[in-house]
Length: 384
Image 1 (spheres, one colour):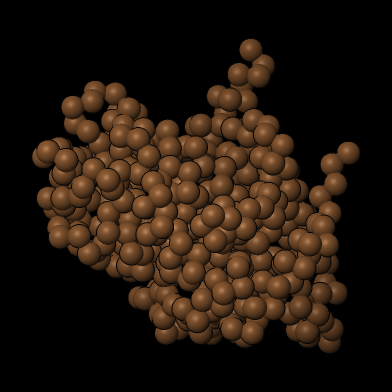
Image 2: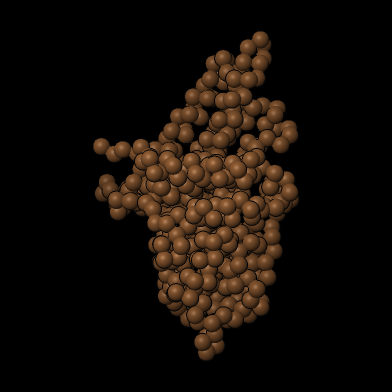
């Protein structure tokens, strides 16, 4: 029997994160989406309390933990932290990549700064002409002695304007096999030849965390900036894929829970035809369906974290969880908007922002179509 009950230590940890964020961001960070300013003070408070380093090794100032604890920490930060959740979700895969594949010099320079309240590294993989087709990337590098000269560009780079450096995937044009041609470089954003433009996002003219296009023109970096092993970039990307999926799934569940709670509370308060709308069966059906979907998503998250922590094969589970939760949170948000009705459409209700912002989860980090394309053959293989 698998018991997903959180331990007393885990409960205390989540309560500590919640209290920290409610103190520093009493409005849940909603004001940041109006001003376009990132709440650095709240992020620093998380770092000062040791929450930013969860899941990272002790030697870098982190606190090792199991995957369930990391998942619940990300869920809690996503529920109460507004834009700081983007930093934390980005740091889960990128900073662990640095700990696993980086040199001591790279770890000292970037990871310890992050644990102390600096921004995470951004990840430069998607390009204007290659999104889901990662192996088709055109950004390339050539060697000039011990200097790599990188040319190309990246697109949809999350936190590119806030990060101090970007993990850039570039290909060696001399290697024919595209999956063996990729190399990760850590490129400081102030390196000559790097230009970053902040892109507008659907529903926002400005936002507290950025999505950027990155131009790389004759960017010269030393061999010491390689992250891990040359030509092993694609394998390194896959190595910590589970952590990225944990961040994806727990983040959207947090959004679904917030929207559901707002809708349920409103259903008790809003009076029409002489009674609260929560007494009408059609509204009750929406409330029940939202609750079922959240329960299903939580069960998928628990199971995924448990299988990671017990070293089981999760290739199918990650695809199913990413696909189902990305779709289902959008269904929950749609029902929540329907319950909220006018106040969900007119004004500045957070569920309206969720409705716009969260649609990207079915594209970012692997589209629905790619999840199906990669997962279905693995399922069918079981029945050959």
